[in-house]
Length: 132
Image 1 (cartoon, helix red, strand yellow):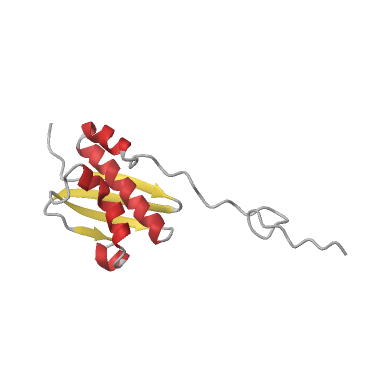
Image 2 (cartoon, rainbow, N blue to C red; image 1 turned 180 degrees about the vertical axis):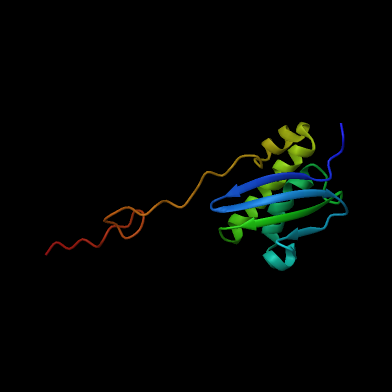
């Protein structure tokens, strides 16, 4: 089997979609052409969430992560990146599946914004009722 130049995975969360590529390297993390600290700021919890799959499989320092992410907000994008990294790790080694599955990193979070319904102000908020 020939070694690939990179391993890729697509992650989704809410309306965010992340295309993740893992290159053999020293642990650089680039999101949309910017270092992860510049793109997501100093949100330590988000950074931990994104790198959890790499930490569980002890690949944090052995891969450079290149991410292109679109749509959604900061938290949704971080969730999409996490999902994408987990899928890219599966592309690297299918035997990591039980570890990633147990941590809940392979499951696509199905929660989405509910659509607005006709006659209502938002998805469920009804106009104010007046008796007289």
